[in-house]
Length: 331
Image 1: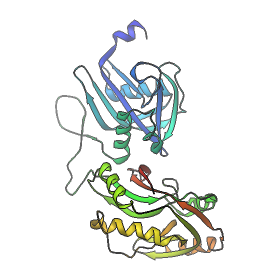
Image 2 (image 1 turned 135 degrees about the horizontal axis):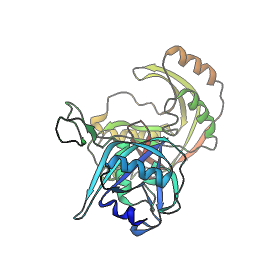
Image 3 (image 1 turned 120 degrees about the vertical axis):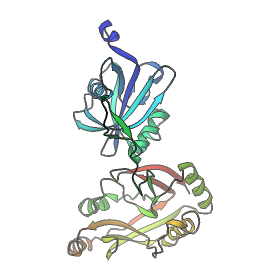
């Protein structure tokens, strides 16, 4: 950094940005300071007379070669000497590249991996969680003679900032590519969440992740790993839409047991009273006609899918319906 650049830098103001694309977050491995060797969101110091948003656009371009557009404010960190503003940013274009100066590499990492990676600092994990859960502040217009930008959580009647979560099994089959192929054609969520069996359907609650983890420890204490087998497809048209199910032919009782023990206790308020039918959704179609056509195309698939279930997962549903795994429990 030249002396001119040093003099033009406001050392008490800095910015960072969370950029998520296709379920992956952009991280840079720092080469200096307390963050040396760690994977941190891109960002840097604001220049004198520069807006925070413009500083962030510049820093992303300099550090990662990516063009971004700042959107919502995720959070602010304050200390006695400075402040650090963290934004959610939208990817515009570019191929991620290291600047080979302030960072040694720039990578796109799966969000769920970043939230578990020891090389990712806790602050970075917290702001990633805020970005995917929708817990951020929007730019709010206001009338004033003083030019500036206000970021706040607008009050909306009936609104809430609670995050949606769900409890699932993510089976790992040796021939899972067959399921992936079907879902790619017929399931709108195929690119957002892996093949799964839902135990507790999406719920909105102020229950903390720590509380949820403790509940699972308690309710799963008597559950052991079990085998499942899936084969054959059925079609269903009801209030949930026009769907295609991959049927479970072995392990239904164990799955239903977990579902029941959760809904009979801490999740009782979220039980809508419908009969639970253990299954894996592989398609959701706009009309019955499309569902019938899709069913005719897959009903002859004779593959059998077998695996052992030894883990229960909790998924946070991001603002774009992407799946973020926040808790995993071995059984």
